[in-house]
Length: 315
Ligand code: PEP
Ligand code: MG
Image 1 (spheres, rainbow, N blue to C red):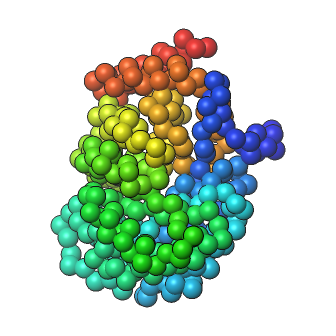
Image 2: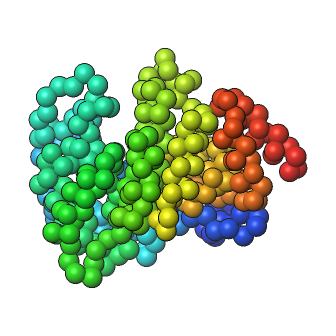
């Protein structure tokens, strides 16, 4: 059974009505890359490059980064690999980047804010990524983007270090609600958006991730969150839209995300076979109808009841 499940997972996932959905993997280190490919990943949708930077007393060199990014790209053997630039900050401090203590690190200097405050770190990372982009299909993704000028500043550094003919694709994570609302402004400047529901939920619902006392509030199926995802899908223009937060692996959320127009789901490697199986059970036009109704619900509980009702009708 396991062998059959893995072989089905190796095939692309299409909905019942034939829409192709890319199933990508979230990668936390080099070992994850091999596991993801074994589980049928069509691509790496999120490489959390933090693993190279944390738990050491100096930044990795350009050569060291190139070596690791190249090894991940080689493991993916021609499939696209999305490398997210360093996403650390107050909650994940680096000993070699001193920062004043912050009362609210999640609202402080993290993600792209830290990278732009320490441009040499970003420049070195982009240099390493561009070297690999000369030989493999890799993309760069910037985390925690809030303003268009942050993207422009990061792109300027990328342009400085890119070699002609080997510029990687560029995308941004949508984790800040205001960025979701400004999708149309970002769209002409990116190849893709990747919605990070873990942070988007935290910021949209003002419920700190990892704080058990507010965990019940932090629900990706809250209609307020679904509206933000809908805004991204409707205003993305030619840019692709992915979801790379935990919600992408939630069987209840999957039909809603596809129904809203998400093109790609990026999940933890072991979840890939199950998510592909879920995609194959869904009819995208029926899901679009459920998703449109979910936007009118008053609570996550109502959204769940609605999806259960629709699933029961389909059986
Ligand atoms: C997210 O915020 O949803 C995400 C995928 O990024 P991370 O979990 O690494 O913050
Ligand atoms: Mg995040």
